Amino acid sequence: MPVRRAEATWKGDLKGGEGWLKSASDNVQGKYSAASRFEDGTGTNPEELIAAAHAGCYSMALSGELGGAGHPPTSIDTKAEVRIEKQGAGFAITGITLSTKAIVPGISQDDFQKIAEQAKTGCPVSKALASVPITLEAQLVSS
Image (cartoon, rainbow, N blue to C red; front, side, top):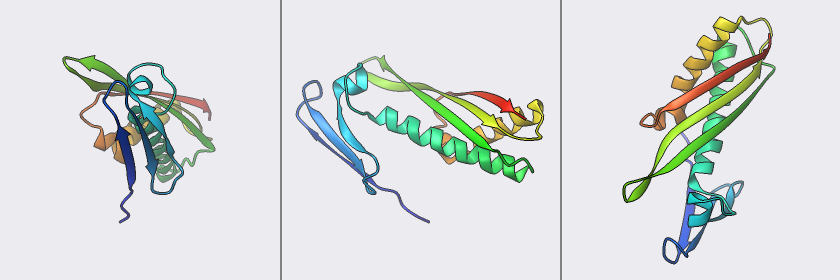
């Protein structure tokens, strides 16, 4: 099985420093700082990357579950929000919301919701983040 890699460099103290991170493929890279992570500063941050990974993984998991149930989707659009909050002396990821909209011909609303929930628990990134509450908002756009 493949091993995925990324790297990060940080220079300076936490408040005034800055870093650079990148994936081994160079498809994901960018500067990050305390301001981009804990405030609304410019740059990327680890939580944004977790959100991108979770949205991508969930979309693929949902497609697989739907196809396996005989309802291949036309399209799936997933957004993920990762919340980070101050807790005590540090910070913690306190919740993730997945919002997905899917076009799936010939499926009932009930079946879609059931499969969407199965995909949430079956998604490898969801499994890796199981210590964080994950909320799903799944919308069947067209059936």
